[in-house]
Length: 221
Image (cartoon, rainbow, N blue to C red):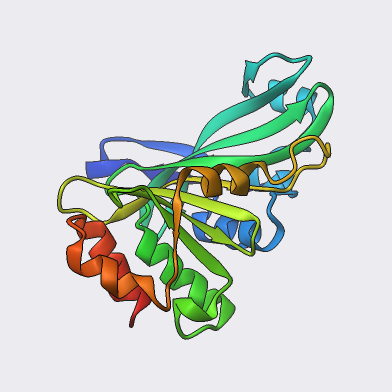
């Protein structure tokens, strides 16, 4: 079972005991496997419906069809508190997989910082060496990164001058066999892929989204 520590809120307004959850470690595991298998990360005995209900998870959806159980946690990331809404999916009684909504108490999880961390974790020099595809909305204010052709990081620009912050982590891992390629197919149908080796510099010159320009600077470094 996970140990407990005090997670501080902004300005030290209050502290609450929470399981020690490191977002960086969770991200590494999720990228490698496309799913979180170790329930002990969340101080759970398992990911059965009884386990989730007993720990206060909320059910969303029709329990006889596709539905999920979710609960919000506070994790530590680079010394800051980050909200994680952990979602475990089911089809009827069969476990499908899991994913996350991500939200920062202060500034959120910055996409460039997370990608830089991923490169260090994989011992890679630049983003073009990684199995990553980048997709964007027409105005470049929203986008997604697909890693290993399976894991999807959705992100958006924060404010008019801010960088991209991470919104969700999802994957194509589907243990029911009924929702194959759901996450990546959705992104590829809604957004346009950017070829890192060719298109980035051209789009950067005429794009008004500051976050896109910063991401392209990182990709070209």
